[in-house]
Image (cartoon, rainbow, N blue to C red; front, side, top):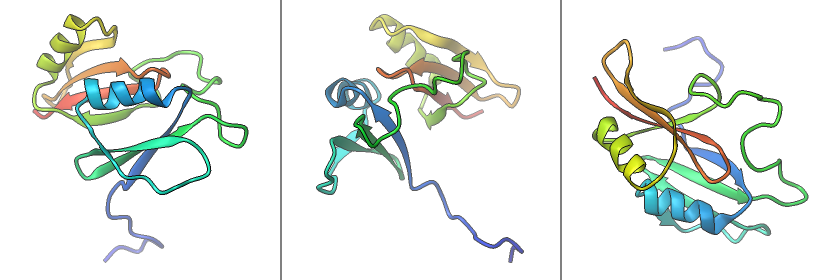
Length: 135
């Protein structure tokens, strides 16, 4: 038993604020292969997607949300900054497919020191997305 105050079990969801829900839907469903799932009837636009055990919540930018996209205070968008990572079967193949479809990669597939392979791409609002496959 841990001496911590709270014991988290897993990531439940990741939320992104987006400008265009349809453009993001095309990316998360059409490019990354996630399944859209039901979303409560919030008073603002958005969409939810299932990525394995994790949900991705999109909030359409509005007057009470944060700004869409990559944080403005971060001047350098890179793989060594804010990002979310999704496990894929083969990151090399994911990179090949993305490039073949004209998606620019932030960082091409590369070997991590532990033997995993990782590739970085951005969504329509420039959120940095890592796709990785295990060592």
